[in-house]
Image (tube, rainbow, N blue to C red; front, side, top):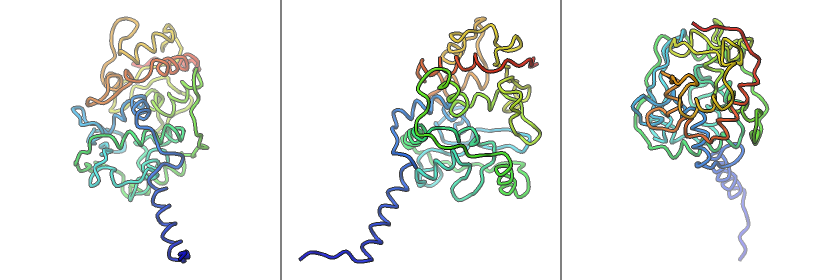
Length: 295
């Protein structure tokens, strides 16, 4: 005899569908192979990998004027990493500034830049993160944080973060793609731009370098000004991203060398496609030149 659908059956069906929906990103299930490319362009999410690896296992030290932070475990370990998180929860941590079970993230996590990442790239990145080797490693507590830090992070987010409209696909080529990658995946400006006393990037000094970069490092001016890289062509810039070799036959050092080579054995800029490295280079040639000698 035919079986009638009861109210209980309908509720169970909806619950199953919701559970399935929560395990995929807001847009689509991702492609881990493409996600590795996104991961490489994002410098291997280097803040989440200690110098000797394993990739994504957390523990990398990030010194800031607002305390010392340690990158969290983003491997798919269910107890100490993100293995128990849904894709939507991971997406919200990357692009929305909210961490599962904690609330507003510290702005040391550059969600304000990642917010402009396309739905497709975010889904692919999440799919790749799920392929990392699970590592059982507890996250280290931050040091020297402000009192009531989560409230402070929420206030910062309220004041300085505007969630952009989501887009399904990134620009396909040229300087438009280069701008997208530089701002929302590789986060070039996050390191190469000065900040205000509140830790906000100073848009008037976009890409002009700073003497107080991550960890107190000196970060050069990469605008096409004579105090920056005016005498570099796009091929020179693309070569730096691939090999770390400067046009004067010197080579990059420190954090830039790490993100080119890949931290802890993971993929870095050198593992991205030549077309994407060239797109970033072409875009950097178009940004407004700024007179700023970084000592």
